[in-house]
Length: 383
Ligand SMILES: NC(=O)c1ccc[n+]([C@@H]2O[C@H](COP(=O)([O-])OP(=O)(O)OC[C@H]3O[C@@H](n4cnc5c(N)ncnc54)[C@H](O)[C@@H]3O)[C@@H](O)[C@H]2O)c1
Image (cartoon, rainbow, N blue to C red; front, side, top):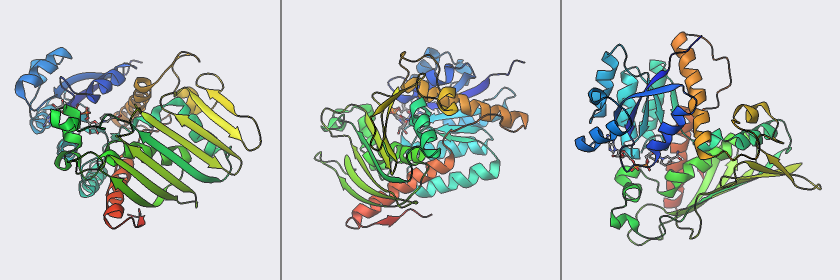
């Protein structure tokens, strides 16, 4: 039986944008979606030109996402889901507009720019019985899922230590003063929210530490830096973590680490073994049982969990990465949407990060800032 493609809309992601194009590719990989409407930019000319470039009919190219939500909801063939890839401060208004119009939402991280807004969205999703995905895309990598399965099966024993770092260098100088699009809003509290690096990439690291370990962060102590002159938001941070099983963790996030490109790395140590995964070499996972030689597990090869196999597209040795990891989330969310559409139970596993994961990310940012501002005091992450 042919399953109708999901009619998809997009907000943000016009000419010159970064992540919108990645979402479009990811949504195409498994042929489950059709991009039919968008508000790709708030600038009318750019929105029209951008829509034409990606094959959206001019009648369904909008400059105002509120108008888009209303008009699409009133069409018989209106969109069933929307992707939000604007700067952070617009996530809330856009997500609310589409949820109120009865449309499922895929939103990039961080969920909103304030914790209060995130809490409102959580309620709205529950009230409307709609689906909401937050694209913490690193959870889509096969070897991340293998690591999660290994820990869940007890391969590491009791988890004691989690070290996670996410280091980049693209904000090592004040490029925001040159008008660089992505830097300009990320260093502006009115558009990024209360977190700089901790919101932009720390939220990914935080999610990954819980996703892989299966644990929850219960408290944190943060020390934030803004090294580049004139910057008000953090561009580097060291954060101590306590997990709910008694494990300790440390999260280092930096966008001023000269020489680092997209250095996301996680190391987890239990009383029986340790493991390590790095995003720049994502097809391999290092696993070292206590007192035994290191093993290198490979995607499509020595990685054997059903979760890793399900997320693997091509044989071992042919690299997969960022786009495929993103696409895995899109594929699973498509299954969720189709089950919702048909009123049936989901008959496969979906590990797509939820609105609750988005809310936790916002709490992480808020508590990290509070800890730093209070003079590096431990903060509970209890709601
Ligand atoms: N998951 C990831 O790995 C990842 C990576 C990069 C960015 N992000 C997130 O994605 C979002 C976008 O980041 P980016 O780097 O692509 O930013 P960007 O500045 O490159 O793109 C933002 C886009 O939003 C558009 N926009 C702004 N206001 C709008 C409005 N009112 N209506 C419609 N469009 C509007 C801009 O014209 C632009 O096309 C951010 O929330 C960011 O945190 C996630």
